[in-house]
Amino acid sequence: MGAEVEGVDLSRPMSDATFNDIRDALHRHHVIALRGQNLQPQAFLEFARRLGPPEPHVLDQYHHATHPDILVLSNVVRDGKPTGLADGGTYWHSDYSYLEIPARATLLYSIEVPKVGGDTLFADQEQAYEDLPDAMKKRIDGRVTLNVYGNRDDLDLKSRTCAPPPTQQQKDKRGAHLIRHPLVRRHPYSGRKALYSVSGTSFAIEGMPDDEGLALLRELAAHSTQPRYQYRMQYGVGDVVIWDNASVLHSATLTDPADPRTLFRITVKETQRPVG
Image (cartoon, rainbow, N blue to C red):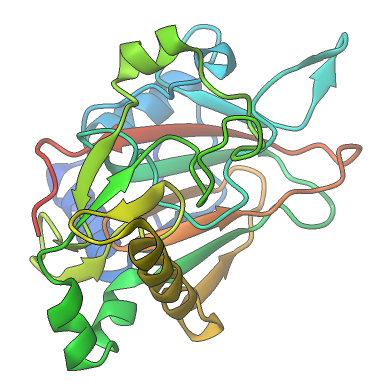
């Protein structure tokens, strides 16, 4: 898991052959980095659209001023107001698993890099599934999880999320309500199986008592985020990092608020609901 793609300038026109190589590398390695890019927001957005239709984040107060498909992640405060979302998900999760049509890929473009920290952690859910005992695979194949925005094993709106909770209007606009997803899903392109959203938004398994379902989810999350499945991505200014949400969980790491960190994020969605 994890690869660097060299010799590509995302600000310039790209052939279909080159794009296909990048897409295939993403499916093969789950997380890829294209270092040292110099992009205007429009160019970043145009490249992202080749991977899929952008889905704006539910917290629209952090959208880019002129390109709302871009979410600004930042710990910078100006005139007493945050310039972006400071907590971009400091817990294991898969993006948009709280939506009926979840994220296919997420792209981050690094604008400001802190002196220390600010890395993203990834956990390989394909390998984690592959390594499960056969008895566990039989137990969980075909199961369905229930997901809500910002759950983190906690249904209390006051405590379950560090980021501001969405308003009812925001949830209605993006369809961020109670959502069903397969616990084990097949990759839409490779067909490989992976654990899906066993941490982050899932809080129950259909057909199982609440305590039993939550205990199983926590067991699977503990298994699938072991250090042997992890990769740590470190950023430089201008780096574009892309990950495949069907194959990995990820977790942001926070930094000292006095140490500026700013990234642009675009999340593109799948074209159909996940299948088991």
